[in-house]
Image (cartoon, rainbow, N blue to C red; front, side):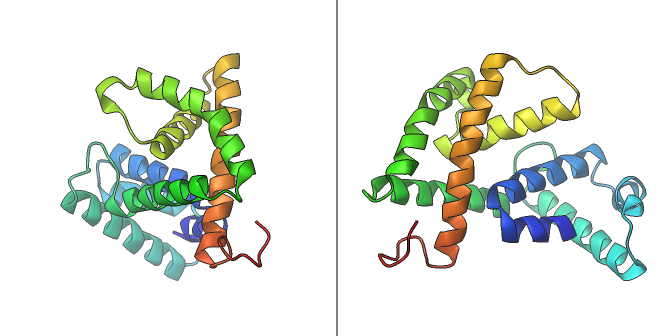
Length: 185
């Protein structure tokens, strides 16, 4: 809750990856708030009020996951909405001639996106979600202390660079500064 709030303000990409991880933590704990309190919340160094707020936050996420039927896989609608917002922004920025740097990064990333989408088979996602799936996959590999090949590292480095730029533009857009002709992007 505290980390999510901070990440939401600072970096939408990190926020989204964090929220996907929270979804998986909830699933790993079988959507059981008592298990989450024991394995997650109790380890957080905070006062009783903050710990209580955290428990309420997890309970609300559990409730949403049940209502949205994403208890075994998938993402909460609020997280899907962020992907949708990022995808829409991506298209707007891509279409605007003043964003040459963004187009350059996207076209450098596109071969990796195409390759990842081909490997996804019937589970294809949009371009932006494909990038996030790759970044989240890397996060999971690192948490499992698994080796990452040179080609994968190269792909992830480019995807990260592209998504970081999109995240920067997302926050500028939230502040109504991205498409302002008087503001430097």
